[in-house]
Image (cartoon, rainbow, N blue to C red; front, side):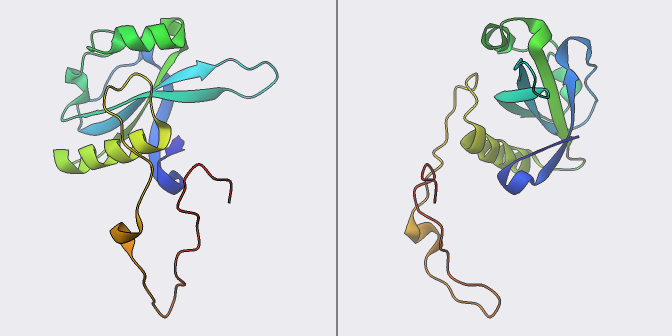
Length: 146
């Protein structure tokens, strides 16, 4: 299992080598990962593509997917490609699309043509007070270290 998303909220199955993987017949969100070979460190991966489908077995895995050539080019070889997936039985396409947008904003995968901004504006959330929380104190710039 690998956890992905904001605050690592989604427990994805995998990663599994894409070349030998058989896709389940289930609605799911999936991420294509490139293995980063860094000597002396445990396996690390980069999210290079995010997608979803009503039936993963119909998505063209492993290498008939329309973006598979871009995945191979980015990973250097098809043997560096891995997949992780999060099944959402009964989940609607709109829910899967929302998850994909969140993952694309967080990881900025190079093989997706759509891009989403990580920034947010005060008017999207506004000021608030509740008995159990304080107002937001995080910096509005997602690239800052504060």
